Length: 110
Length: 138
Image 1 (tube, rainbow over the protein chains, first blue to last red):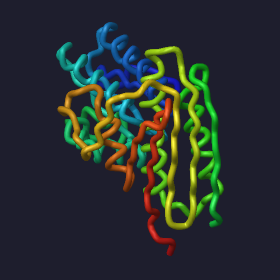
Image 2: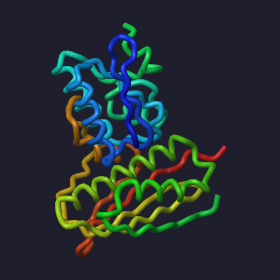
Image 3: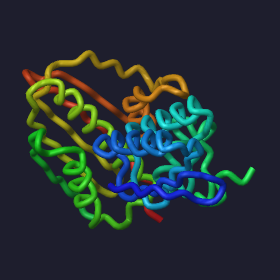
């Protein structure tokens, strides 16, 4: 699993994730989100289009990131959820909290 | 599809959840007629279960664990047996924590993803079994 962070239009930090978001990689995602916020970008989007698998520890890391972003006056959104990832969001009803957007670039167009 | 039974023995550390998931994918890969929802659900439940086992082992000195997977035309099932300490396990149906909780969804997810989950303490081992009926073949 690796994460790349880039700033995209609207002063949004796009975190592109690749691989499995599980108990091994979830702590790293928490760090990457915190680092982006510490660097001054409080609007975060996690691009999940390269994540072919996520479990409950991945969900926990996203919720943790959402809380940190909100505390800093920002937000955390998700984009590009693949079918297994979408299933985990639906079953846990967290699709109400973190709605999926088609792409990172469209996540803050509202 | 023919029946298959495959077993993995692992020791954690150094083995981790990626070792388990690589194994699950390798076992299911030849069974190309498993529909996505069955594959996703079974794989996710198994990873949640193994994560639970590994996580509890992390508090101590590590564990050895034996994972067996059975696949046939009707059902996918797995058995995980580990040397971790006995835990208080309640399987009274899926109960999700608050929306903003950062943990505590693993066991609930497992119960939503498979048709049966069973836990028992056998001697000095914890034994988990899960099974999911497959969608009928077209």
